[in-house]
Amino acid sequence: MKLNDIPEYELETMNYDDIAYIILGEEKRKMKINELFKKVCDALKLPENTFEEKIADFFELLATDKRFTMLEDGYWDLRENHNPKLVVDEEDDEEELIEDEENNLEEIGEDNEEDIFYDTETDDDLPDDDLEDLVVIDMDEEEANS
Image 1 (cartoon, one colour):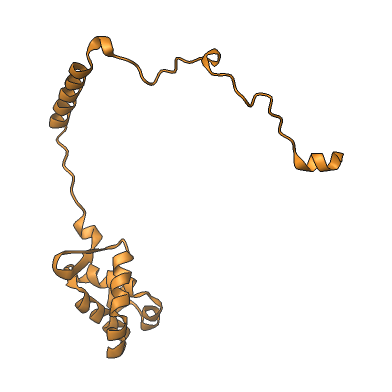
Image 2 (spheres, helix red, strand yellow; image 1 turned 45 degrees about the vertical axis):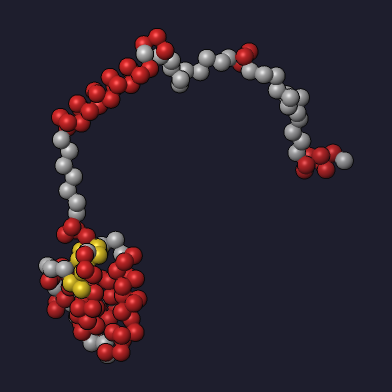
């Protein structure tokens, strides 16, 4: 959707961040916040004093909107244009994993291996419960019986 294709009455109902999203999408370049908000104000035909009064609110709006990202030197752009690329070299990861397992086995030793997740206790091994004779009384039933 292009900014010029949106009717003026519809633009007036849009949020500043939605208009900024359209502008950055059309411009296809990063922009300083002053330039971006100036274009938003121009699109809405707002007076100059609105720009001065609302620039801080506009900054906060962009900072909390996950569609935007702040770049170096105060530039803003759409986050979708700056997605990080993660490259995983599976071969190196497997070698590191094998080395780590070998190091752990050497430190522990085979005769010291113990499965710490196996529960060996049975109910007979547990200490006597001091609260086994405890009876729960419903206060409503107690009052009804009184």
